[in-house]
Length: 499
Image (cartoon, rainbow, N blue to C red; front, side, top):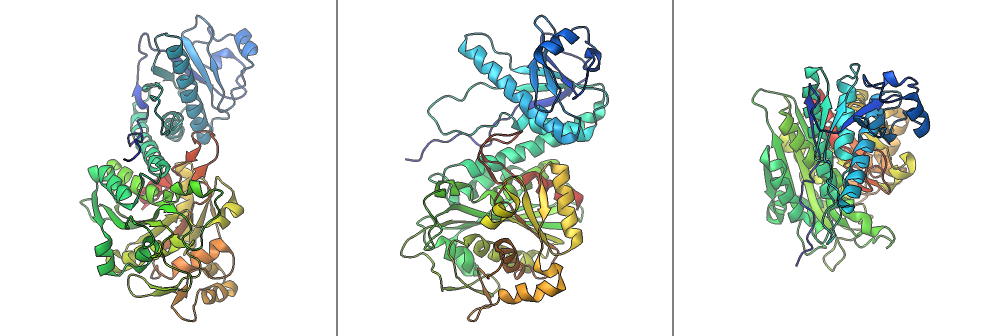
């Protein structure tokens, strides 16, 4: 019998815009760093006295949340730092965490818990700040736990009090983006005794399938079509692979973006087995596929005027008598062959099939793949920044711009094709003596993997996003919870929106 896991998608607090305060609803206000006069916090400056500010050592730094003075109508004061958009996201997350902690205390003490809040916004706040605030408010209380305990009560609704009705649209859009991040987290956090390739494919149907077209192909179809990379990686598992194709097609003719995600539902490393330390974290090795599923659903909900296809190769890389081996030669979709040198480099094998399929069947205007691909990226960029490899400066700039809009950090990495003096060296290193290409060419790990994938992109405008570092967090910070982070889902949506 399978373990019971939390319902997906995780419920997040609703955020809505109101123009007049609601009676009997707790009120929160914001404070910028350096605000010295109580009147600068709110029209209720007489309630937030200098004496009170001094007593609580209020600084206004982003993420600081203080309970308001006893007897005041202001229940909470949240710091937004210097007011930069990212500071608003931090403030929103901190406020939701403070609210949930208070709710838990009230419930434990047998008191009635207030699960609705209204947050007064200054007149200077704009759509960028609002979008980041909503992201923080919705994601700050995210949690995923497989436990016998009942989920603790949490804030249900946060109302943003503002006289500007134009902020309603960015609030609704940001709410969809936050839900996409949460869905990507849900999928990646789910334990792999539950999450096999079939489960991941069916979750794409249950979630994105409500607003977009989703087709799931099984191992028989994969064999008929020649998806040798997916079949090789999935061949060691009793749970067969799947291939998921998600489609959003607006009525008008529009640019076509194809998103390819790595869907390895668990990775033992195969015959080239991983060390035991850290292997339990490999349930998140399908974070790239989760980001693609969540992004396509969000794009469809936002009804963006761009055609988007998401492709997710789902497989489990296991060890058995039928597992693929170093030294094998695998034939991918379209006929190109790969010499296997390390079965733990399975992500590029399944993505090669999907990329080749996209080039042959879909011919997109932009091709983007996203994967937890190489440990080298964690060494290069740490755990909070994704790596971008791009075929052109224009493609790279589009991804970086989308990341800024999404509040996700990216750094462009050098691709061999960027410099003529290096291109031939790296391009030649991909060649195999017995096959068209070899799976793990020598050289810098992240670049070598990107150069391998480039062989399957057909010369199309292309970006490879390596999220091995930021896809998983080892602790809570800002709007991020320990575990799967949902990184890249919002960036993919913003990238599609720019097309």
